[in-house]
Amino acid sequence: MLVGDPNNREASKVPSGLCFRCEVNKEQNPFGGAPCTGSDTKSFPASTCGGGWRVTVTFPSCWDGVNVDTPDHKSHIAYPASGSFESGGPCPASHPVKIPQVMYEIMYDTTPFNNKAEWPQDGSQPFYWSHGDNTGYGIHGDYLFGWKGDALQRAMDGKCAGDRCAPLQRQSDADAIACTKEQSAKEDIGTNTCELNHFQPPATIASLEIQLASQKMMLTIVTLQGLLPSPAKNCKHGPKHVLAVPSR
Image (cartoon, rainbow, N blue to C red; front, side, top):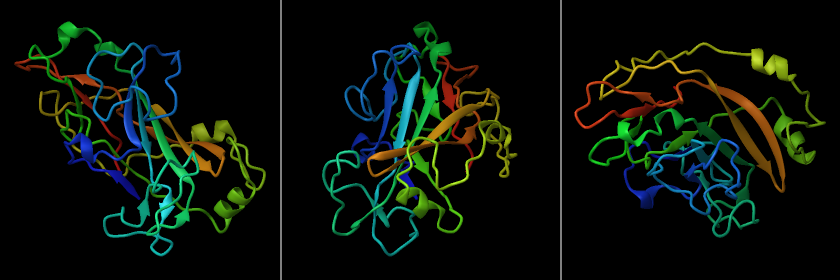
């Protein structure tokens, strides 16, 4: 399933479950509340952030009950008709089946670029998604998963919470961390210029949160490469910083 659109450049078209939070400090204190509430924005934060950015991508939690996928990878799912998954909001008649909610939460350490003197002199946004978007409105996520046999149903029936789930066999933290996979789709991400940047930042761990009814199952499932911005050279209006998104 997909949510969001990398080609979007309009705030009104950003789904309700996608947002940015400008953290005051890396301790995230005070806590800003539930994702996509309070001062969270649909666009890139407009100023420097003492704790970097927290980016949230929450997928729809209602299914049409028929299609496991659709050509656009979106039409078979929907957000609640009112309220939210957390508040028990009802699903729309077109998508009556409530499913586990999936949420990506990614931390970007933008603090190395908090010197406003390095930002474009015209006051424009210095950050770009790697697909060329400097608004943030192109935020999107895609999720493809498979469960062996009835594993997912057993987890739901067991009301699993956190990353401990009695009905399922659990991999040790050490084994999970040691499990890596080489990039299978090699991409040419260009050179260190204003148009495209080449960078090799350290890996960042993203947590996948699956909320089952009122319970939560936390799974650290993926290592994302290239999440830190990188300064470009030879820019006429000040450096631009490119945020890379992981290859599909």
